[in-house]
Structures are given as structure tokens and as C-alpha cells.
Amino acid sequence: MSRLIGYSILTIFAVVTLIPLYWMVVSAFQPPSVVIAFPPRLIPSPASWLNFSQLFNGSRILTWMTNSLIVTGTVTISNVLLGTLAGYTLAKKFFPGRQLIFWAVISLMLIPSQLTIIPLYALIIQLGWVNTYQALIVPALIMPFSIFLMKQFLQTLPSELMDSARIDGCSEWGVFQRVVLPLAKPGMGVLGIFTFMGIWNEFLWPLIVTNRSSMMTLQIGLNSLQNQYYTDYGLLMAGAAVSATPMIVVFLLFQPYFVRSITIGAVKG
Amino acid sequence: MIGTLLNILHTIKKERWAYIFLIVPLALFSIFNLLPMVATVILGFADYFPGGSPLWVGMSNYTYALSDDLFWKALWNTMLYTMGVVPISISISLVLAYLIFGLKQSIAQAIFKSAFYIPVVTSGAILSLVWLWIFNPAKGLLNYILSFLGIGPYLWTSDPQMALPSLILMAVVGGHGAAIVLLTAAMGSVPTTYYEAAHLDGASAVRQFWTITIPLLRPTLLYLVVTSTIASFQVFTQVLMMTGGGPNYATTTLVYLIYTDAFEYFDFGKAAAEATILSLGLATIAVIQYKWLSSDVEY
Image 1 (cartoon, rainbow over the protein chains, first blue to last red):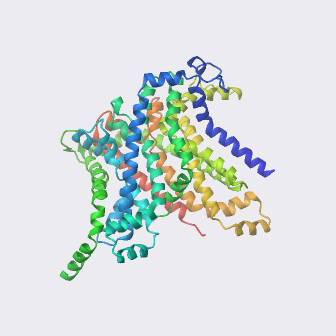
Image 2: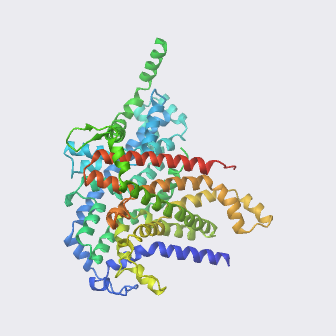
């Protein structure tokens, strides 16, 4: 009996949580006249692709998606590699300045991004980087959290593994490449997912440094779509649905990594 | 003295690879994180326009920001939003996590966790578009559903009284995935012997929840309260896309105020001062919550 109550409560909440996304998909696949009909039709009539064809003809959504892929892909690869390199150095090498650097990383990780974007924007203007990939990519090539996460992860590796590789004549770079990198893979997977989701969904920074439609990321493109077609909800929901699909697919494919990225981020530092 | 210096130099030489490995990450980190943070604090004491040179004005950005009614309005809105979102969503997450954890089949657990997590991977821009449609006063789904209960219709985001609660409602409906994953993981680490003992003593499920589960989950709950307070304080995307801070400044939050001051009015000095105040405020809140919630953990 109590199990039945549990299932019922969970199901009700799950339905409420997913209704917005259900409604997005339903509205996207209805012809405009049906979308704005009142009362709304909760069960869709046969699917129509009209909103999607208007979306692809009337906006640059494919350009935005390509931009998002380029930016997110580059930033993710860079954070995973540089984060592993810096995290390994801070976890396993004992050199003067190590504590200072680690504390700088932790402090910067905890401050809100609004504290850095104003001078960063001034810098981007000085460099003439407004509406460029550099502006979207370079400031995020290595983020404090990436260093922190990989340091926490690599700390648990036994140092004997690296020492014995050194005794066998391995160079320092060789130790990193042949011993640390293979062992770091689970941590790198978690960091990769974490960075990918964060950068793909990032809003404030790309909003500030892009205003030309051809350079917008998907999120900023959706914002411009909203300004342009604010009454055409069918088209807007088609845009939202197209934009939501890649991230949901990534989530369903890499679900275990997502779960670990949440729990590992909460480990007491 | 010279001996220690030589020692340090020797260690530096011996560990030179550490510095070589750190050159690229640290250079990027310094240019794009460390220096901008310092620069923001300095800019707070200057009048600055991109491309110009800073003019030192002492504390006047701070006195200007703090005497601006809109700053206090934005602070109040941000606090109302946070106090609406954090307690409600953590309570709901806790109940849902407890129910999911109690399910016997691990497949059912996984399905529910995924269902609650999907809105979390959906961006704020997407959710803003979807919720604008749901909130639409004339044709929206929400007014339609409420009409069956004889409630409404409401203007939602267009009504000064309802705009902020609308944003809270939106955050509360979608934001449980991460908390549920964390809480169910923490519940898994509670020794089952505690529950068995309580069961033998005749404690009900509700009583076990309050006297065993909640106290043992305290570190996780603390983490959730601190992180979700910080996240709620920085609410921005929904405000920009759904209300533009209105109507009549009813949804102007601190980050939105900083954004408009910096990137619409190009008053970088004032915006830098406001950003510094926000960061100090967030740090203070985190410390207070940490002290208050972790003070009497006995387990």
C-alpha cells in the first residue's frame, strides 16, 4: 500500500516535471493555427513539419548549433587536457608555490563569474575580439573547477606507480603520458561531461561578446529568435526542441558520467 | 638564511617539471581569471568606459550604488526569489529522493532519476521560451489547466505581483535532478543497521525519516543549501528572456542590474562596485549557512 502511494507521488511529480518539455514537443509539431487554438489540444493531431521548415528557412539555427559545437568542443578538450596536467602537478608534485597556487584556484572557483566579466569584456574589446570564436573560447580554455576536480581525483592514485616508472627510466612527460593519463580517464570523463554541459548551456558570456547573428551560440540565437518571432510560438517551440535534443541525447548516452559528475563535485575539498 | 635559499633553489631545480607543466594552464588562469577579478575590485573605484582610461573616483561608485533605490529593489527581489526557490525545491527533492530510494527495483529508480534530471540538462534559454508559452495569458497551458479548478486567468509574467512568483514556480518545477542524485547517493551510505534497530523498536517510517535519515544527511543538505542559494542569487537568463526585469522592475535581480549597468549603460565602475558587493554578500551568506547548519552535527 505504501509502495503504491510512493509510486503515485513520484509519477505525479515526474509528469509535472516533464510537462513543459512535452508541451514544447507537441507545440513544435502542430501547424500554427492549431498551436494558438484555445482551448489547447493536449493530445496532438498528426505531426506537421511546418514550424521546422520555417525555422530552418527563417533563422540561422544550424549556424548557431555549429558555433556551439565548435566552442563547446574546443573548450571541453582543452579543459580536460590542461585540467589533468595542472591537477596532476598540484596533486603529486611538491614544489615551492604549490599551496599558494592551489588556494588561488579554490578562491577563483568559488567567486561568481560576474566578478570577472566586466574587465574581461574590456579586454575583448581592446583585442578586437567581439564576434569572434576567440572571444567565446579563449577565456574558458582552462577553468579553476577543472584544475580542482582533477587534483582531487588524481590525489587518490598511489604515487608508487609514478615512482616505479621513473626508476624504469621514464621521463617526467612520459610518466604523465603513459601512467597518469590512462589512470585519469574516469575523472576526465566526468570533467568532460561537466564542462560540455556548462559551456553548451552558458548564456551571459556569449550574450555579451556576440551580437552578429552568424557568430551567436545556440542559446543566444534562441534569445534573438524570441525577439524576432515573439508571437510565433510554434516556431519558437520548434527552435527550443531542436536546441534541447543534442544535450538530452548526450545525457542519455553518458548517464553514468552525469551521475558521477554531480557526486564528485560535492566531495568535500 | 643563504642555506635555506639555496635549498629552495635546489628544490625548484629538482621540481622544474612542475613549473613547465603549469606554465600554460597558469598563464591562462592568471590572464582570464585572476587578473580580471583584481581588475573588477579596482574598477569599483573608478569611472571607466571601454577604450578610455580609468578616472579615479574613490568610493563614489559604492555610495552611488548603495543610494540607488533600484539596487535595494534588486537585492530584495533576489532575496525573495532565493527564499522562495531554495527551501521549496530542497524539501521537494528530499521527499522525492526518499521515495526513489525506497523503490525496490533499481530500474524504476533509474527511470525516475532520469525523468527528474532531463530538465536539468535543458538550458535556461530553452526553458525560458517554453515557460513563456506556458505562461501566455490568453493561450497558455497553465491558465487552461487552472481554469478547470476555477482559478485565474492570471497574467503571470506580465503582472507586477505575479512576475517574481512565476519565475519561482518555474525554478521549483524543473530543478530537482541534481539534488535527487546527491541525496539518494547519501541515503545509500547510511548503515542499514540503524533502520533495522529503529524498526525493532517500533519506529514508524515517518519517524525513521526524521530521526535517522535527516540528521545523517546533514552534510549533503548543507552542501545543497549553500550551492542552490548561490545559484539562485545569480538568476539571470530567465529574467533577461522572460521579463526584461519588469514589469515595473518587479523581477530586476542583482545580476540583471549588473548586466544592464555594465552592458546597456556602460557604467563599468558602478557595475564593478555592484559585482564586488554581490560577491562579498555571497561569501558571507555561504559562511553563515555553513556555521549555522554545521554547528551541531553530532554524528
